[in-house]
Length: 403
Image (tube, rainbow, N blue to C red):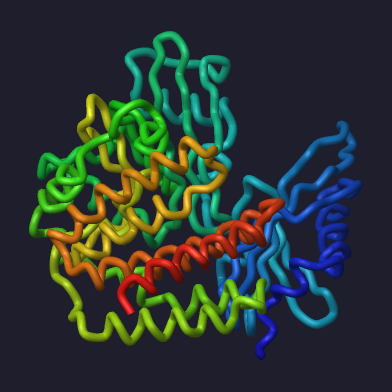
């Protein structure tokens, strides 16, 4: 099997690379731990590490990133520091200087973010760094980041998407398309030449949180209606493969970390792939990554839809299955919360069955669950093995309902 760097970046042999990179920056590596792993089996691996570093000005906790690939490095790797371990060349960088997210240094520091908001006249009056609170909501190294910016006095909230150059215009156009059609997508307040997209906070509460408030966050019919209200032009955008198309890829990723699940994953992959072969490519407007974390609700209604980067043609079952897959794999719930989510699924899935093919819905949902099962290891959760096994059991339960 080609060496994609996973063993190097997830084991103790990475330490000399980290130490050399820190020395090159003028620091001393005191300690480190693996933080996050992004693997494309037989292609590349990117990992981040929480490192304690002694600098001339004092000790700090830093985030280091390393990318290894099969074959030659890609052009953007040259924006990082290149080191060799004797067998391969790897790209190493110190957060926030991500070689593919050129705007991240601007989004990571309050003073630079204040300058950006002021230059774009986003607020009614200038703000200072002291009036901003920044928090990283999501960071996929070399892929994307989202920073929450809270402005104090008067209170206002923005979300800053840090995007790769080749995706920026496409994502901006998708926001505009949906907003112009009256869909509750985020309003873009500002864009920058280094590919930041600043959006205003949508109203309401995140559905992921509202699930655990009294009552239902919304009606299942409302979710279907929201998706069906997307403009026909969405179906003319570039097609993004549904999650089920990559089920074999994600199954291999899980098997690489938990070989004892290989037989079950092979069976699930075969059942999903053969079962979905009868369904043609869809041409309905779809969200592409539709789940409780992407929705805002208020008063039992949907009032916002986030992360519209993935919209394009597909099948309505793709979106509804994505939601089912995510709801089926929420982690760290107490018993009361588990009971509520099970009850919601028991009532919502039959409504979805009336809109799409029930067999297709469950097979696609199982594929989504398998894709999500890579998350606990990537995030280096303490109990990632137990979480992953539980997710694969959930996928199996969905498949066994219809085969």
